[in-house]
Image (cartoon, rainbow, N blue to C red; front, side):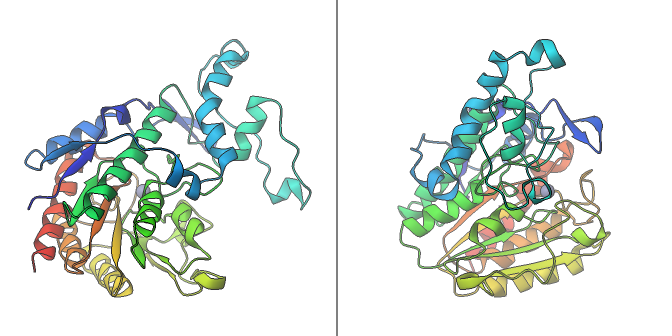
Length: 353
Ligand SMILES: [Zn+2]
């Protein structure tokens, strides 16, 4: 059975416009066109349009104040003086109440929209514009619809074409081009549907610090990731090191396999194999499928091929458990769709034994 592709036209509504990286405005690469390039690459797979879901699972993963902020902040920005003051319509933070500022003191809610922006957004690259909330919320519906397909027994595996991606979004905030954590929401929904233990395997070139943070102290959802070594200077810098393995009840339930810059299929697949072993015995699987580890991708120095992605799919598919594959990064428009197709083809093959 070909793996169904759950998508929503609403996910095209977020336009990043620009990112501000080390003080320099650069063009955003997380473009709406990604949706169409992936759909083109998956031309032979059946398509399912996402069904709108309520906020119950979303609010189990993300804090209410953060969700409310993301939903309303762009309208608030438009109603303020910002278009005149700064000449642009994107919500962009400039002050961040990190511990360097707060020093353990309780925060008072910032009244200014441009002040509050830095409480929920943790970098300068992830701007909120018209349609950002709608697209991010639709991506959550894609993930939840994919979960429905596997939990109601209609499918053993479903793919959610989520855009914007989600694995950098934490319980309380957004960053790294991610707003709502689609993979974490899928994992929580699988748990709520009675999967005893869920494992998230993250193949994106970057560490999924948001997903790791959300499940850091839990043992019912395990998190394993292969990614370019943040210690070599890559986002998210502060997280994704091999020594991070969870805490409290979640001690040992996080596994990080950072790779050297320039790593090719062999090293990457060794890590994927280790993650498949880490996931062994799980009742359900969520794959955070970033294809930005590919050689052509402009956002990372890893050198994985389409054959590598297909082999990763076979490894994870052969676990033989219900799986929801969630789209994360992948920015090289000409090869993006083929890489996703390669992974899904491999996963399908692996799950057929
Ligand atoms: Zn990435």
